[in-house]
Amino acid sequence: MRYHRLGDVPPKRHTQFRTNGSLLVEEVLGFEGFSGNESILYHRFSPCRVKEVGEFTPLADVPGMAHVEWVPDAHVHRLTNTAPLAPQGDTIFGRRLLMWNDDVEMAIAKPAEAAEVFYRNGEGDEVLFVHEGSGTLHSVFGRLPFKAHDYVVIPRGTTYRVELEEGPHTWLTFTTPGEIETPNRYRNRYGQLLEHAPFSHRDFHPPEELERHSDRGHHELVVRVRKGFQHYTLDYHPFDVVGWDGYVYPYTFSIDDFEPVAGRIHQPPPVHQTFQGPNFVICSFCPRELDWDPLAVPLPYHHSNLQSEEVIYYVSGKFGSRRGVDVGAITLHPSGLPHGPQPGLVEASLGKRRTEELAVMCDTFRPLRLTPLARELDDPSYALSWYEEEPTVTAASTIT
Ligand SMILES: [Fe+2]
Image (cartoon, rainbow, N blue to C red; front, side, top):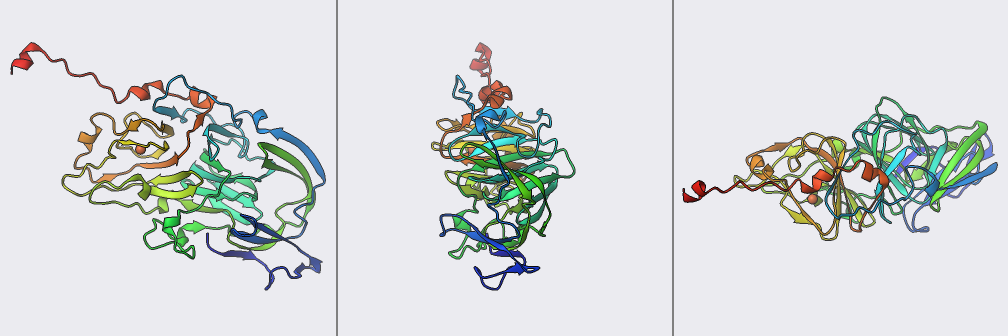
């Protein structure tokens, strides 16, 4: 991310800075010790200040978020249809885990209400892909409005609360112990996005306006740490920042601002890459012109992702290489198996010059584990969807 500044900051860091005569509390919030990106925030109250220490709730005790594994009895391609899921829970604890490994958790959320507590992920970055709905991410960094088709990227350490506006609300969420970044190959040595990147800095939207709360009162804060949630009671509003600057802050990027790459012949999945995390990538498949060579095959070739698990969430449009896969469905093509278009689809695609597909893909380099919710939503017929009966060969047809 680029440097951004909001509100009031002193001309020199680590110097006295006051509001109405009171000395403000400077907080350096950063990565990799003091060697990674950081932001410096100026609080009215000490961010360490807690009035009461509440309970620690293990992740295992939170239905839907617990790392409970369903071990399928067969290794096959899977289709998980999340469309029938009804709205449930709030903006934090309503996330329903579908699959995970040590690098990333993927969940579906259809929040019915806003969480009343303030929340901070103390040990992981989060991405909310907003399939449906709109709202505002309120945080120590300010107000960040979001709308359908936005990726909302929230770095660890961000205390936030989500206000929901128009619904229904459907999010695909990612949580990683690593950092969510734009791919290295899109950036120059200074971090600026290059001309060939499928987006520019103008497409990334930082918080717009600070909240600057100075009120006291009773506020609950929940921090995700050590495979659980630690509860605290504060006697001040945590959005007390009067100014901040730096490189770490939540932002939105709309999938509709991703500039798709097309070619004379089929372009490989890395052209769709949007973000990188440790041992995984997030890609955006967007409406685009298709391959223009007269002999081009516009659909993906069969491929064996020997070191990848490939997860695709279908957002809208028709996905040319998939039959019977509707909006809200997730396909999982695990490592060790080839996959490609289902029978007949390649022939049907020949000569097509445009696709309206919109989908989010997450490829992980280490195997994913599935939850009981994935079992509940599993469509076992998908594994056989490449199979078709051979036409019966009769004696007569053999003679001709
Ligand atoms: Fe694939």
